[in-house]
Length: 64
Image (tube, rainbow, N blue to C red; front, side, top):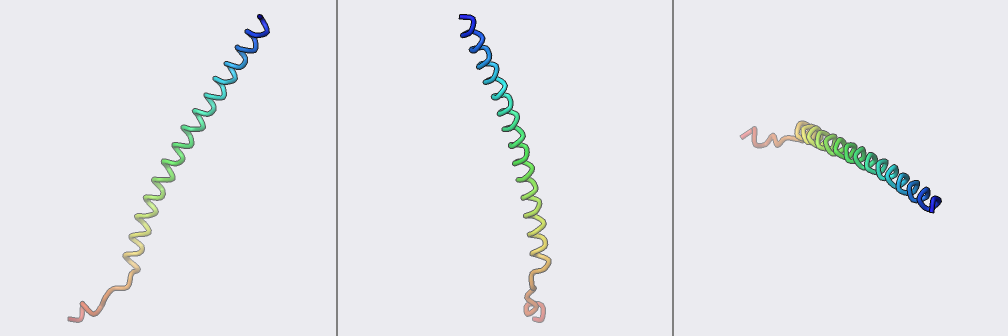
């Protein structure tokens, strides 16, 4: 009976430890993905601004 109790406690402790590690990894991955999304939004805004400034203008409408 003592061996069963010891193994049970060890398995429960290992499961709790691995669950804690998995939760921390999930939280960090969520934070990294949030930062990547914010960076992609900023890059999209910068790229759109660059495209607008380098786009060829229609000069024919200015001559009329």
